[in-house]
Length: 180
Image (cartoon, rainbow, N blue to C red):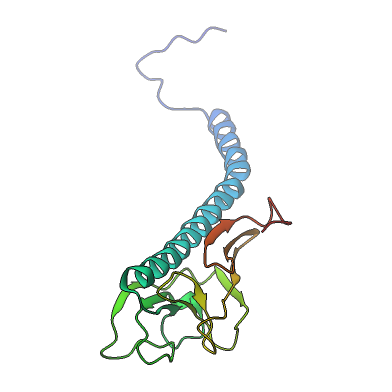
Protein backbone atom coordinates (compact mmCIF):
# COMPACT_ATOMS: atom_id res chain seq x y z
CA UNK A 1 0.00 0.00 0.00
CA UNK A 2 1.36 3.35 -0.97
CA UNK A 3 1.54 5.97 1.72
CA UNK A 4 0.48 9.40 0.79
CA UNK A 5 1.67 11.99 3.22
CA UNK A 6 -1.07 14.16 4.40
CA UNK A 7 -1.09 16.96 6.89
CA UNK A 8 -1.93 14.67 9.83
CA UNK A 9 1.08 12.29 9.34
CA UNK A 10 3.70 13.28 11.88
CA UNK A 11 6.72 11.49 13.37
CA UNK A 12 7.60 7.82 13.35
CA UNK A 13 5.69 4.72 14.22
CA UNK A 14 6.80 2.71 17.27
CA UNK A 15 8.28 0.00 15.03
CA UNK A 16 10.33 2.56 13.09
CA UNK A 17 11.52 4.21 16.28
CA UNK A 18 12.57 0.86 17.80
CA UNK A 19 14.50 -0.02 14.64
CA UNK A 20 16.39 3.30 14.80
CA UNK A 21 17.14 2.88 18.53
CA UNK A 22 18.43 -0.66 17.88
CA UNK A 23 20.71 0.50 15.06
CA UNK A 24 22.08 3.38 17.16
CA UNK A 25 22.67 0.97 20.09
CA UNK A 26 24.61 -1.43 17.89
CA UNK A 27 26.74 1.39 16.45
CA UNK A 28 27.52 2.70 19.96
CA UNK A 29 28.38 -0.77 21.24
CA UNK A 30 30.88 -1.20 18.41
CA UNK A 31 32.27 2.35 18.46
CA UNK A 32 32.68 3.22 22.17
CA UNK A 33 35.46 0.68 22.99
CA UNK A 34 37.43 1.81 19.93
CA UNK A 35 36.94 5.43 20.92
CA UNK A 36 38.14 4.73 24.47
CA UNK A 37 41.25 3.03 23.09
CA UNK A 38 41.88 6.08 20.90
CA UNK A 39 41.52 8.42 23.90
CA UNK A 40 43.95 6.30 25.97
CA UNK A 41 46.46 6.23 23.14
CA UNK A 42 46.25 10.01 22.73
CA UNK A 43 46.66 10.68 26.48
CA UNK A 44 49.61 8.33 26.63
CA UNK A 45 51.28 9.81 23.55
CA UNK A 46 50.77 13.36 24.82
CA UNK A 47 52.28 12.55 28.22
CA UNK A 48 55.21 10.63 26.70
CA UNK A 49 55.92 13.54 24.36
CA UNK A 50 55.74 16.03 27.25
CA UNK A 51 58.26 13.97 29.25
CA UNK A 52 60.47 13.61 26.15
CA UNK A 53 60.34 17.39 25.68
CA UNK A 54 61.31 17.93 29.33
CA UNK A 55 64.35 15.66 28.92
CA UNK A 56 65.41 17.56 25.80
CA UNK A 57 64.87 20.88 27.58
CA UNK A 58 66.95 19.70 30.56
CA UNK A 59 69.78 18.63 28.29
CA UNK A 60 69.60 21.78 26.19
CA UNK A 61 69.64 24.06 29.24
CA UNK A 62 72.60 22.19 30.73
CA UNK A 63 74.58 22.73 27.52
CA UNK A 64 73.43 26.33 27.16
CA UNK A 65 74.24 27.25 30.76
CA UNK A 66 77.34 25.04 31.05
CA UNK A 67 76.17 23.63 34.38
CA UNK A 68 74.23 20.76 35.91
CA UNK A 69 70.47 20.83 35.27
CA UNK A 70 68.09 18.25 36.79
CA UNK A 71 64.71 16.80 35.89
CA UNK A 72 62.90 15.47 38.97
CA UNK A 73 59.37 14.48 39.98
CA UNK A 74 57.35 17.41 41.32
CA UNK A 75 55.89 17.49 44.81
CA UNK A 76 57.64 15.25 47.31
CA UNK A 77 59.87 13.74 44.61
CA UNK A 78 58.58 10.18 44.77
CA UNK A 79 56.05 10.01 41.92
CA UNK A 80 56.28 11.23 38.34
CA UNK A 81 52.45 11.33 38.32
CA UNK A 82 52.73 14.56 40.34
CA UNK A 83 54.36 16.20 37.32
CA UNK A 84 58.02 17.14 36.92
CA UNK A 85 60.39 20.05 37.36
CA UNK A 86 63.44 21.13 35.34
CA UNK A 87 65.78 23.25 37.46
CA UNK A 88 69.38 24.14 38.24
CA UNK A 89 70.32 22.07 41.27
CA UNK A 90 72.87 24.25 43.04
CA UNK A 91 73.18 22.06 46.14
CA UNK A 92 72.86 18.62 44.46
CA UNK A 93 69.93 17.35 46.52
CA UNK A 94 67.51 16.76 43.56
CA UNK A 95 64.87 19.04 45.10
CA UNK A 96 64.09 22.56 43.87
CA UNK A 97 64.46 24.96 46.79
CA UNK A 98 64.22 28.69 47.31
CA UNK A 99 66.93 30.48 45.39
CA UNK A 100 67.41 27.71 42.79
CA UNK A 101 66.39 28.51 39.22
CA UNK A 102 63.28 26.62 38.07
CA UNK A 103 63.23 26.44 34.28
CA UNK A 104 60.04 24.46 33.69
CA UNK A 105 57.26 22.76 35.68
CA UNK A 106 54.75 20.24 34.35
CA UNK A 107 51.39 19.79 36.06
CA UNK A 108 50.24 16.45 37.52
CA UNK A 109 49.13 13.87 34.97
CA UNK A 110 46.04 11.68 34.72
CA UNK A 111 45.86 9.39 37.79
CA UNK A 112 44.92 6.43 35.60
CA UNK A 113 48.26 6.72 33.79
CA UNK A 114 51.26 5.15 35.53
CA UNK A 115 54.92 6.07 35.08
CA UNK A 116 57.55 3.57 36.19
CA UNK A 117 61.17 4.78 36.08
CA UNK A 118 64.08 2.37 35.59
CA UNK A 119 67.48 4.07 35.72
CA UNK A 120 71.02 2.99 36.54
CA UNK A 121 71.09 5.23 39.65
CA UNK A 122 67.69 4.41 41.14
CA UNK A 123 68.18 5.57 44.73
CA UNK A 124 66.59 8.95 44.00
CA UNK A 125 64.21 9.65 41.10
CA UNK A 126 66.00 12.12 38.82
CA UNK A 127 67.84 12.61 35.58
CA UNK A 128 70.71 15.12 35.56
CA UNK A 129 72.75 16.51 32.70
CA UNK A 130 76.15 18.18 33.00
CA UNK A 131 77.33 21.13 30.91
CA UNK A 132 78.44 18.87 28.05
CA UNK A 133 74.94 17.43 27.62
CA UNK A 134 75.77 14.03 29.06
CA UNK A 135 73.78 12.43 31.83
CA UNK A 136 75.42 12.03 35.18
CA UNK A 137 74.73 10.25 38.45
CA UNK A 138 74.73 11.86 41.83
CA UNK A 139 77.73 9.87 42.96
CA UNK A 140 79.99 10.81 40.05
CA UNK A 141 79.72 13.48 37.38
CA UNK A 142 81.64 11.19 34.98
CA UNK A 143 79.30 8.20 35.37
CA UNK A 144 76.38 8.33 32.96
CA UNK A 145 72.78 7.77 33.96
CA UNK A 146 70.69 5.76 31.50
CA UNK A 147 67.38 3.97 31.55
CA UNK A 148 63.73 4.65 30.80
CA UNK A 149 60.31 5.64 31.97
CA UNK A 150 57.55 3.15 31.18
CA UNK A 151 54.20 4.91 30.73
CA UNK A 152 51.06 2.75 30.84
CA UNK A 153 47.37 3.50 30.46
CA UNK A 154 44.93 0.65 30.01
CA UNK A 155 46.39 -1.73 27.46
CA UNK A 156 48.57 0.97 25.87
CA UNK A 157 52.21 1.69 26.78
CA UNK A 158 55.10 3.93 25.71
CA UNK A 159 58.70 4.28 26.85
CA UNK A 160 60.90 7.34 27.02
CA UNK A 161 64.40 5.88 26.77
CA UNK A 162 67.64 7.72 27.56
CA UNK A 163 70.85 6.16 26.27
CA UNK A 164 74.23 6.43 27.99
CA UNK A 165 75.07 9.58 25.96
CA UNK A 166 71.93 11.29 27.24
CA UNK A 167 69.88 11.18 24.06
CA UNK A 168 66.19 10.50 24.61
CA UNK A 169 63.73 8.75 22.33
CA UNK A 170 60.13 7.60 22.57
CA UNK A 171 59.14 4.09 21.55
CA UNK A 172 56.19 1.73 21.73
CA UNK A 173 57.08 -1.59 23.44
CA UNK A 174 54.04 -3.25 21.84
CA UNK A 175 55.30 -2.47 18.32
CA UNK A 176 59.05 -3.04 18.86
CA UNK A 177 59.76 -5.06 22.00
CA UNK A 178 63.39 -5.83 21.09
CA UNK A 179 64.57 -2.23 20.60
CA UNK A 180 62.32 -0.53 23.10
